[in-house]
Image 1: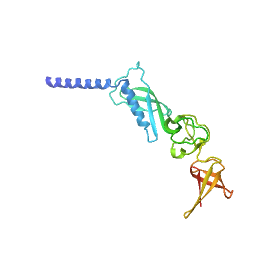
Image 2 (image 1 turned 30 degrees about the horizontal axis):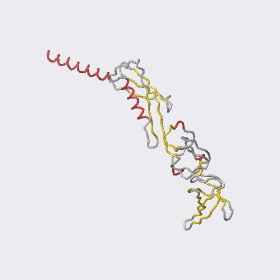
Image 3 (image 1 turned 45 degrees about the vertical axis):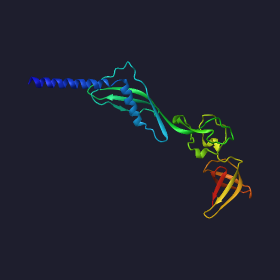
Image 4 (image 1 turned 180 degrees about the vertical axis):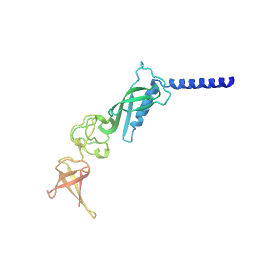
Length: 230
């Protein structure tokens, strides 16, 4: 009987020791990493976007109490998409919670000027590159596809590091001489013309036929090339 009591007391000591070890794991580093992992699940990176998460360090004066149950994390509803506050909770009989501030930066690859591009310069891989930029700093629709940009000309000066939009370029610019293609299922006819407005790929543009002097509306389908589908 005495041996059984001693064995039971030994098992109790082991359980107490195990609980103490688990409690010591709940230090600042553990809580901060727990919050980071939770935010990574809430804001996953995608093929087009990258997410950078920075969790603020816990004030060293805060004493983190033990928790005998798994801790949990959640985002209160009032959080913005950039600056968030993560609530870490212990829901045991004597509950506690800690709020950690964090920054969630979502970036996406946009086309930017590798160096200053002057008005009239043609855009190609020598002066345009893809760069990841925070999407909250981007205003308006910026371009991400080089096939839309390469071969176009700058309508205005584009400073180094600035994003490129359709408003700042034209694949065909007003006054350019263009090839007009009249196409049907059985034949193509080519002639020359002059652009009376500016446009980009797959946009409509007004062109004057140099031979007939007639003004037509066609679709841009390449550098200095428009098409009319008959």
